[in-house]
Image (cartoon, rainbow, N blue to C red; front, top):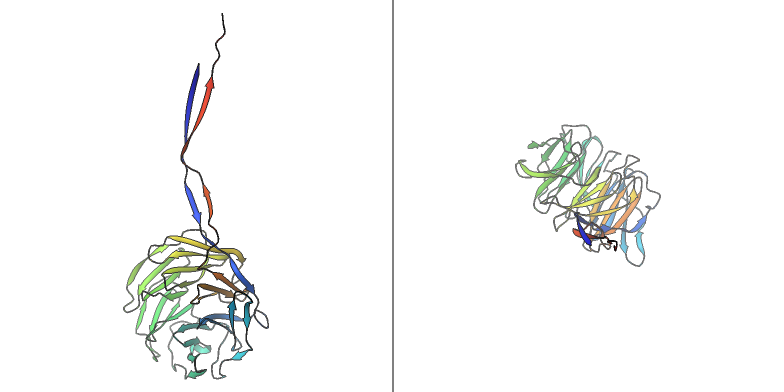
Length: 303
């Protein structure tokens, strides 16, 4: 006599798209005092508190390489708390005493500082610029909008916002580190445009929205995560081997070039390049839904 016991095993399947760093390296003269960087015409520009900026590029054969050192004009006074943002070919630098400078990377010339810039805070946490020249600052939890060449904010909105960036949809994206959340606002009038909680374990340090709508968030504990900027869905991760970002107090930055290379750097770990156009094979674990059959056999004695 035999019996069959059937056991149902239920589970879930999850896949994480991993992007490893294709290049890691220090900057010329070390990585200290780095304020952040931008990518313009597929070239990397990294700014230091001294006013020096190192320009370089990445190629598959040689990795990261840098040109000779350059310096911003001496009229641009910057400090350890300086912020930088790129709009077109214009590099905006928030320098000492809240002076905002506009440096043209194409002509290597500077516009006079926005005199009398009346920032309602001592130190800004984030800065971004839209394509018409409106400058947005985040500090003390709120966002202030300054029209082009204006020293007076014409709009203040939001709360609990740190680092900010503007997306291809024209929305302002901000990190709410207290609640591990992304907040979105309309740039024109500051009204809320929804948001989402950051899934996964992350200490958000910087953000960037790519032209395809992917949201890149650097993790202060190492690496970062990639989300759909509209739905908040988790799309992938940056290798956590890039660890301890921002540990020395420098600012963490993200930038993307036209070849799908993501640059992540700060004063503690140097520059890291991720090929986010070509993911590593997905790391997948699965517990499937299936059946296990256990056969029980009973032998009867002959009498």
